[in-house]
Image 1 (tube, each protein chain N blue to C red):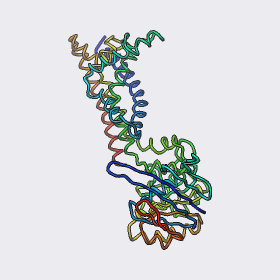
Image 2 (tube, chains in turn green, red; image 1 turned 90 degrees about the horizontal axis):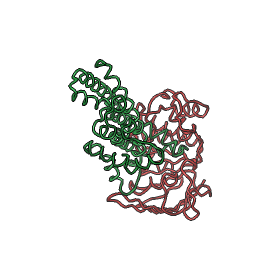
Image 3 (cartoon, chains in turn blue, purple; image 1 turned 90 degrees about the vertical axis):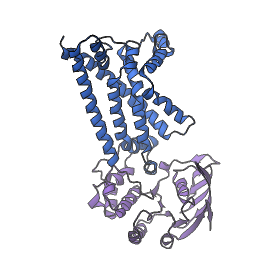
Image 4 (tube, each protein chain N blue to C red; image 1 turned 180 degrees about the vertical axis):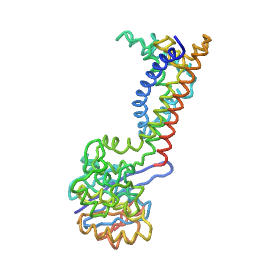
Length: 225
Length: 221
């Protein structure tokens, strides 16, 4: 197998993992971002801090937490295995969970800021014009916040694509099954396959640059309006 | 028409605590609530519109209870069918004039299309001289055009009454008198009951068939 071919499989896997992780973060990040922006409850800032932890904790610490939670003998993992025979460790689904946890703060922060930037008076205008609360969200709040949310999603996609530490601990490095791009780079360097490593590194960098350019463009657009 | 208002509300934000206690009956077709800024005028208007929930009391329009803490009535804003002209107009910035005007006529979870029409929309766009700017976005409009767009948006669904929050304060002083004349003429044609809050004495003479003074969260005669 030449370098280009051996790069294709981990790239496809990485895109799959990052795609699913971003989808999960879309739902969780928008929901929690709205809760943090609009909810009035004690412990709101504590919740924000806890949810931001994945951004600052060493990935190995995060990976360890995830093993404690979804490992074969973890709190959730043991139950899932006994009840449904589901095992998340050493699967690509496990990698999705690791990536979505690591990247969640990026969506969450962006969504919270975007929702807080929406003038409440505009939502009030929607209410007096006859809209239900759900309609106010979809017709007023979301259209005004989506640029910021989308920028956060792109960052989260880029972050998921590059996720290494927690993924390695939770999903391992099984070629073709859980060996993502970033893990494959590590393995290639360890094995002295510099040609493979060069291709992998180039692909990763290019993909991330494209995503960051898109995110920057969206953020600038939302600032002008 | 008549508004009966008798409400209490404590609003607290860090470093500020405000007690609103308002009680009045507005029976004139045009009533102005007059008072300095910070007296609780906007809070009162929001409570009437259903945008602010009082701690206790009662709000009724033509005898129908909109809010009654004793009887556990609290009609949501969307069911009160009032037009509301916001102080800064609160036009939807991503929608053009036509879409803003058609906004309240369209139910569901989607905004009206860019070329939204219909008899009522066309009539109000034309009545308020907005047809030439119908496809422009709010930030492209002049202050007067913005106000007329907000007014068309509020009136298009034939509300039971029009609530106006400092309708001229966002305009340049030079434009204020002219706009006041225009609004006066227009509202006389529409013949809709109105309740206006203002701190501008000039609004009193023009719109205040009945005037209520609001000071430090309490209403005087």
